Length: 240
Length: 259
Picture (tube, rainbow over the protein chains, first blue to last red):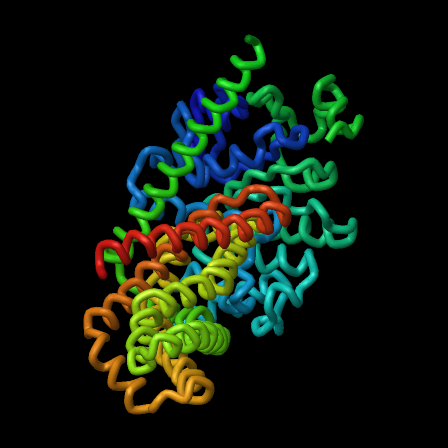
């Protein structure tokens, strides 16, 4: 089991965001989590990444517990996980090259190896030639591509995508989805996509979960959405 | 009765929130200081910040110190000449500048320029998820973002204060000699007699304390920003206001202990 979550609880001040959530994701599986804005989808990704501490419950990633461990152990667990943030979260003060090289600087690789890896990743996400550009010079879609390259730099086993296509026009959304499908196929990573873009759900996930009241409803496959009332209303009714 | 009760509840909540925020600030500050002493310093980042936060503040610090020195000397010259105490002007200006005005003015300038820059930059990084990305990529944001700034400001503040002291004192000289017609020899001689090495070093030390305070306050508030562009603006303003107030309080405390 690549990701295992049991009885997860998380609240902010008085608001209970995640309420006894359970989830198991097998290696190589691709799941999507949908739900209305503010229901706790992004919080769940941050909990898996170890960026937030849960109030209760256990999260294990590739066999290692994520919460309540030392910073050094947390760093080791995070090496297995790549995350594409909603805003891409590129470092403003660094060029595209330095952004992608950033995670590689903590490895023992030589400058030459890092350079080759960065150029390879840029090629992979279709951004060859942009290595000297700065984030403010890129479009939203280009920033997401660079963010994706940075997330893949350490060859993670798990990819977490937080609203990867939100805010992009349909053409750019499709290109990012193509990229995600392609990367998932090439590297056989386990992936969790949090989104409310219908096309993204259909194209990038084998299983779909609807998040409601801090818990996940039983999963359905993309072809089963119309047979399940709750999923159908959410996806077709556009309640996001 | 009900109104009194609800006011008591509001006051209680305010007090609790105040102490919770104070506790967070103390914990963050202790972490910054601990990491500054126990983790390797990224000297490349320290140099970059020393340039942007320190070297680029030289101009505004010198202009401010120059005019404060001139204004102070103008008042001293007028009053002291009435009592025939012109020979003491250099010493009085020197003590005021080195002990109080130099460090305080530099602290105010740095709080406005550097404190605001740190708070705004970190707050922007926070709301654009860059701080989380840093964590996700295995770096402690305090160690990566705050410690180099703290070290840079600790290095640059005494230098800025020293420059401000010199310019403030020399500006006083221009006024004392140009307007007060004081003998230049007596200006420097009285300063030489009345000023001690401890006055000079104490002023520089004050500058370091102010620098540490500015970085701790602005970094703490910047990294606690949550709500978009509005939050960035609010935290930046708050960091400058709180830094200024704390600088004046700390200045009084340090002066009463040191001099």
